[in-house]
Length: 112
Image (cartoon, rainbow, N blue to C red; front, side, top):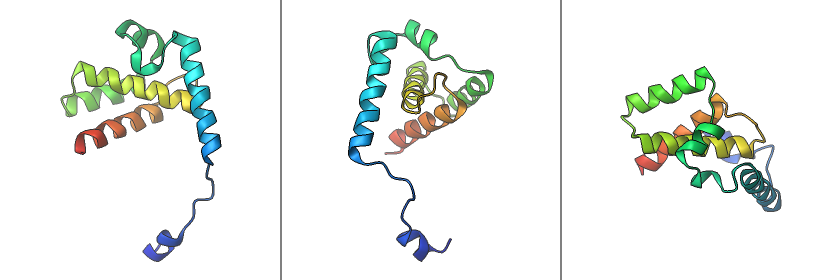
């Protein structure tokens, strides 16, 4: 798509602020129901319980942590963000796309 078309292109699907607000409220409610706290406050034991990954997702996270020499703290933060992304997507499991998105947020955070 040429740049001029990209500049003038309007996304087909947008959410209004009220819809986004409700998704965030629902997400927080889900987190509080599950662990009696939001994902950012999960302990290491709770992370093990609520942030279970399939083998592909675990391998992806392990490769990224090794490549960028991420600390255990960063590893746990990525898991908690991925759990939140999965909650916002109404997914009971953390999937590889949730891990990828959380890693991207982590990399952007460090780039700035």
